[in-house]
Length: 157
Image 1 (spheres, rainbow, N blue to C red):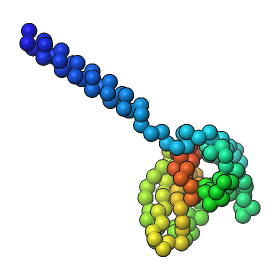
Image 2 (image 1 turned 90 degrees about the horizontal axis):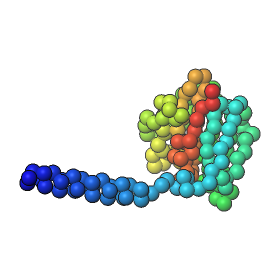
Image 3 (image 1 turned 30 degrees about the horizontal axis):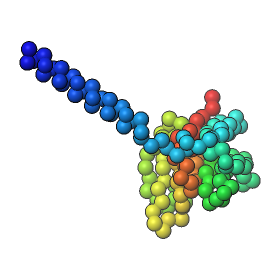
């Protein structure tokens, strides 16, 4: 009988621990972009879609066919830029990045590169790019929402 009582106490403690875990797990902070209303940008021509904060504006840049700029109109220093170019640009990109640290990451489930500027570097903000097929998809930005926008990036079939 003492063994059954002991097992009952153990089961009760495990159940209580699990209940406490589930209660506190639900109280974890949700990433900020998940709390905001978002819009989806979709470009069949460039072959991608992504989500961005609904209060931002979108514009196609005149500097090339494959440049889209997402900007916070309340603070024009907050932006995310998507550039889609030929993959041959990668070497030039790395040369311009100079002394930035290089880290592996993913973009739309593909292997990607993150360039992390060092102090005194010519590049500023976040930079993530991936070579997929014949295209180089480059996302750069100075916004706190950058990681959430990158995480939402998807290629179109």
